[in-house]
Length: 415
Ligand SMILES: C[S@@+](CC[C@H](N)C(=O)[O-])C[C@H]1O[C@@H](n2cnc3c(N)ncnc32)[C@H](O)[C@@H]1O
Image (cartoon, rainbow, N blue to C red):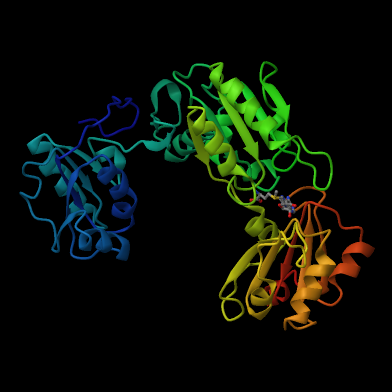
């Protein structure tokens, strides 16, 4: 057996479903390797006198069989694959020797060159497994797990954001993907959302959300602006639905890119229902809602131990005395926890007055975060009594999130 890493390994994908794999040693190596072995369907026997709590939990849950003792010769009988991961080099060497005698491929965690198999740096994206191995051939530095991990990360990241392989992809997601784009910072869209965006023929985008990502789209992608500017001119929802249906029925891959999460005051379900009624397949990609992320990015936790045990997200787009309001402001005023208001800039005075009138103290801390997570983010701090005047004085405009409650006063950036 070669004891150097100069000879390249022969790459292979082991199909371990239902096959016996023996893992010796219950430490962090086991903790790292077990999830992928289990995902591959392996029948894992762990041999170890002790295990980390999460490995022990897998045994308790019946995911693995744990023989709670030291390894002994013969443990690899009937195994297809083995991992020697104890903290004793002599024991690992003996396990590899047994594996060699039984012709079982065996990874040795403490000294990879002395094992008969190497664990590649592995990652997955969209049904593709990326496995990277390095070796010392052609004068390279030798087996280099850090380099392998870096290359794996780069490939997986580019597969994830669609910048690698999007054109070569087979069948794309048919119909319309309702993609939550997050609060605005382009880094805060999900990996899946970004990938679907990279595959799209047509993108129907709101004013809110990660507008910067639209710049990255190739020229052939049709971008339709569905801007629903607060208090301004709106493209009717029916018109948006019609555009989505038309493009999807023409066989194009359509992304409906929405700010935050599609189902948080985003009319996402209206669009999904309309599309389903037209026989168009809908894929929902959740997004990071501004309700939590905008306060969080501005240093405000919506809950905090000992301070707030609940948070309530409320739309402030209709005033409390408006007959169309569905919000019980009296009940909300009695809550001690955090109130997060969206679309509330215009009605902030009336909302604060209603909360105070029904018992929320005047000095309750309030923060207003405009254009959260973006370069233009601004935060204004006030109390329930002063919030509306301060917002007006500071020329706060939508989009803004209003946070009401003692959580505003916790954390290093609190006023
Ligand atoms: C029509 S709602 C859509 C909410 C969105 N679906 C979500 O989950 O974040 C629009 C409101 O979300 C809030 N909002 C969205 N993005 C924001 C941001 N980056 N900064 C502050 N507020 C934001 C504002 O209150 C805005 O008026």
